[in-house]
Length: 252
Image (cartoon, rainbow, N blue to C red; front, side, top):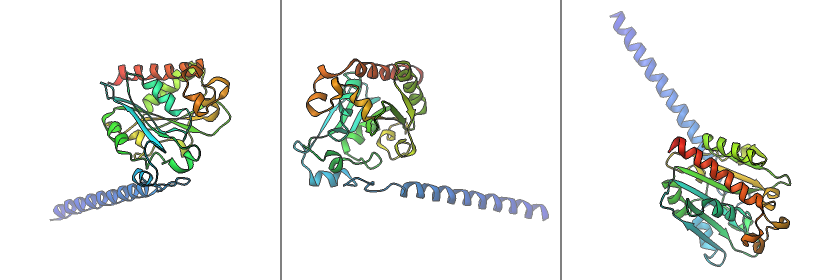
């Protein structure tokens, strides 16, 4: 009888521990999910539907996309065009015809960032989500402030992140780990909404982006003229291409 009671007590204790653990996990997840601010600070809209109800496709914004035969690799710039200048050009060049490419581009004469920026954890444009969900590798370009030429790396794909850092540094570029507010480590961040649940987010300072164009000119006309791209632009995209190739050989 005593042995039976001890067994029942042990089972009850184990069940209680499991229940408490699950409760804590759910509470943690709930806090994590609720930590996503919508709309984010500085953003005008919470969702893409809200944005498209106010601003017109073709006049205020546009989407460019290409799907490669190998949809395992996606290169994106969800804050392209006039929102975060030169990110569309970087994504387009890196993707080429080999990888899938997506960009949401602001086309307004002014106020692109203030009116068309939807932070990555809230960006839910349907075509972008579909392409991300098909991919195993997702690299997303973003623009950051800063008068020092550097790239801030984030996202949940630590292995690819490390390879990109290695190849960029070998090519002479300054790379650092992204600070918390730019680290792209939230599972709701579109860069991580892949088959593997991870991706790499590159935040390039304004100084670094300016270095990719003659005379540091990233105006609309300049950045859309391929002949204005500097050698640094090509070296940068080639370094990331080498990192992707190395990663694919190891993992895909």
